[in-house]
Image (cartoon, rainbow, N blue to C red; front, top):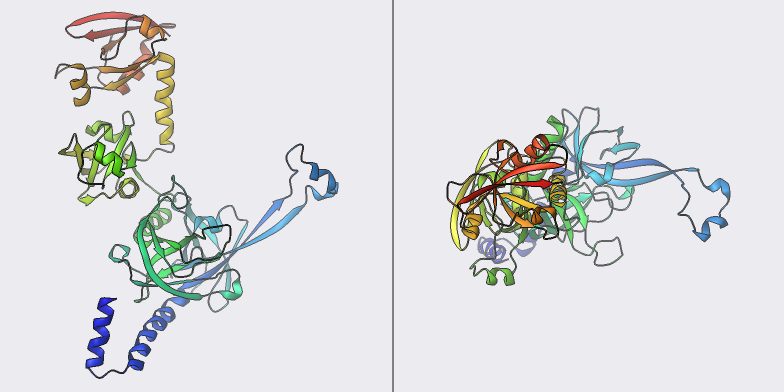
Length: 460
């Protein structure tokens, strides 16, 4: 606002009238809208649904005629999209606009209509790329959402409520950046928040700056209640996140994401004070998945990641988005706080498994069967159990006192250095040897406690 007032003051001093300034300001909005409108499309989708019976015991079911059930109904919905490649006919939109639809029709600003096919979709970012076969398209110019500032003017363009309101233009400002946990904790979210009116039907439409550059894909609204209308809080996916997803969907047919292998949380004030920290930025490590890139690099529970690839990490969602958009197989620098001291690690990321939670579940199943949990030797465990620096094996970190392992003599701090006749180097090898070296239901461990090693036999 201060800069705007200074600009107005300068223009007044140059002899501009108030009407001239307002006219010029208005023209900036109109020029931007005029520039991008041909690249905005209306998306009409159809789906055939079959009326199924209600849950058993529903008394209202008996009031309906029998022929009501099994009938097929045609449902229609509406969304928006943005042409990003005029030669190949690629259009960006939201995944929730086109997901599981039987028919997708794209309507251009000149009222031409075309059937569209899905090139690729990604529910985790709520993005999809669809394609139409035609010439004479006009693609939008992609901007740089990293350069956005809170308070900057933006325009939202789409088809709210029905196709008769297509190419509606609303104006507002960037209200906030980096919003997350808006739609789902499991999604990849880094929303631009805006007060430009976004309504049902605007989903998949464009958020543009006053240069006519696409800086976001409109995705969600927050009404503060059960109403579906706008209340001045809308969210758009930043174009720099969109670019990566879009390119992967077009070139690979799926989104390739990297994986760190940690469970993370934000640092709230109470946690920061308890840990005697001066900052509330960063991502706190609550758990490290076994044999993950994080574990291999030496990251431990309780570490606070403050920087990844020279990017200062503001919170857990920020780290999640930065890591996921990085390249699998590439080595990155991670800076963290451990016990109040700064440390630097180098980590080689891996591609995100299809179900990373299953890896933790698998370990938990093993632990349930065995009655104890093992971890790779790390500095924290060395300190806790006074282990030798050059010791090899896996450390028993937890044990169920009701388990056979406990009655066999195994205790926390014991180091399992051999399973059967094979040496143990890490947790992955340990679990692998459990399957290969067990005879019937009996497993032989070589365990070291202090300066003494001895064999233990455990019945599964």
